[in-house]
Image 1 (cartoon, rainbow, N blue to C red):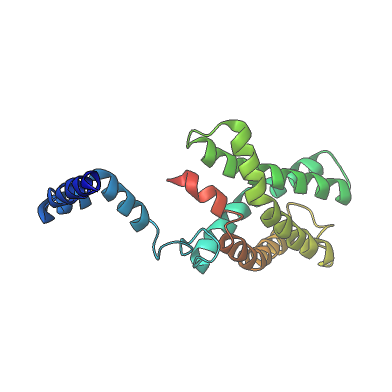
Image 2 (image 1 turned 180 degrees about the vertical axis):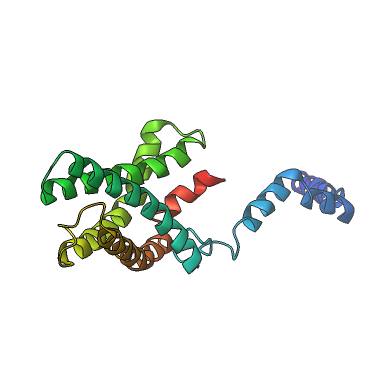
Length: 200
């Protein structure tokens, strides 16, 4: 009994040694501040980060992600059509090349940004595939669908203004339809939400 009482006294004394001022210092410990800072970096706390499931995703954010994909797709498509036309290929072969290059350039733009963050190529490639595949696929489906269904568009030459007007309309339609898809994906931590962490 005497031993227990002595232990309790020591424990009480140990607690008494920590004055309110010392507790204040402890609360300001660097580790504690880092922990607080970490939470402050995520607006709204857990589940509210704009790139995690349940977070708020703006239309501007989705539009930027779509525009990023659209840039690569447009470069690839135009290049594919120029090459196919120069080689005298038919419409199907030229469109196939254009779609292939659209995916290639779309991935390449994303890959370039991730690699600049110091990520190894294999990891960066996997992230690019996961981030852009659905977005580019939807964009190419709409874009090439418009070109294929628009009377005379596929038979027009690259020197015809008509072809470029239809292509511009097709790309614009693809942008409008793909933007909501990207917004939905980013809001669930997918698509370009996976790339965002490498841009900081």
